Length: 562
Image (cartoon, rainbow, N blue to C red; front, side):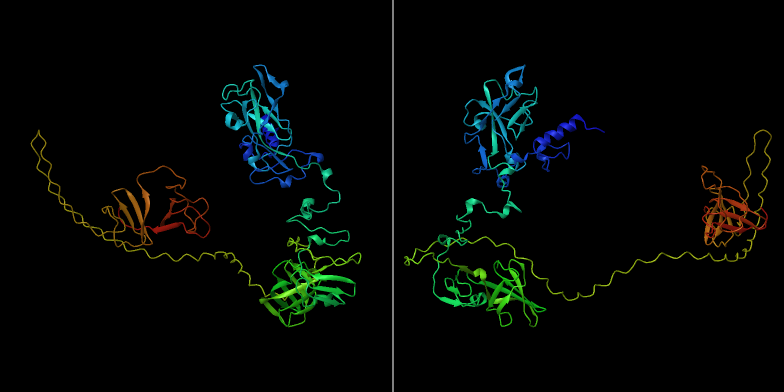
């Protein structure tokens, strides 16, 4: 189905504000996904990363603030080609004359505010009236193009009543614009990697910046910290220089390369030691700047770790390894700390270009700033293979198997013997015949003779309204109180019939079917079905289930008078 006009409008409206449309039911500022409009390379904001991301603020050479309270609110110029006939002198569009307004994509505080006030107002936010993007009372709704700096009022909704907007008023916009470097052409073609890897020119030779090098690639003397030279030693190799016992300010003359070095940085402190599989690992309190192949001198750790070594790897900025054949040492803190000296602790001094007289000692310079962390060293050699890990724990017990099939139903037991027939009760005496009355009025009816004693309960009784006691399996009992026939089976009186037919149900109660061959019946037998033959009366207690579930019961016929 095609997009509706409302959906198209919502997409374009949110794109204008630098957001992607994720739901048509939320306001522009409630959208969370940024989606800036297409931008040409020559309009790229090169220094956009320096725009304050927290509270909006002006920033020299990068962000300008157009503030009402500071008297710098931008007075707009009407686009006279868009006047409305019904509101002469009031226009639909106004230009700020400024581009690159910072959108709320950076922070919602960068969203522009719009006011109307008299011309020349010094603080329209205080003396004028604010117009909100959603308008007031259905009028005054507007949208702002942050790239072009153009304000558009929605057609026919200009606020001409409340707040009052007339042709004598001026529209003011308050917000922030980007004034930094623009265009990819202003980014050096030689730059590789991230801009964050480069040092701004303003930081060269400046406080909190970086030291500068002279024409010979050496640090300028004026940017070196004050040093106190106490001892001078002549050595013939790098390792010999590193093994010297020195303090900051001491000098070493290298006869092997005709250069002079000064010990400029205190030895690095070693705080932890570890030796595993003939590989020593030491930890420094600060970044050491070492890499694979660096020569180091270790002291004040212990006899196992002290000495001159070649670095094998530097896993982190504060750890390094070297080969050491010795027994394993578990990881433990070095206390008091040990020390590390490498080539980075020594600084090459410049040689004079001519032999002039020694100048006066200059005043002690200010302590130089800590240099930037050196680049990451090359990847060290592959470490030794670790010991084989312990055997993993036993896996969980598998799920229980499915239950086996039910065994065949056992053969039906023999039918028990029929109980003895109960004795017939004696017949009660007949009462005397009443006297014949005189002709005419009918005489009184004679008294009814006394009822004879009730005989013992037999297999079938109609004189008992409660369940007979002492019954045996196969006995029948008719309850005259509700005209229901019961059969005694398995210790219970089972209802065999009812004198009150109920609503016909699906169980087929009352059907007479053929005598079942087995007590589990056949498909189609229903609870309530009955059958009979010369020996038994059959009663079905449940619908057919399968060829093993018992649903039929039977009782033997009994002899006797009715």
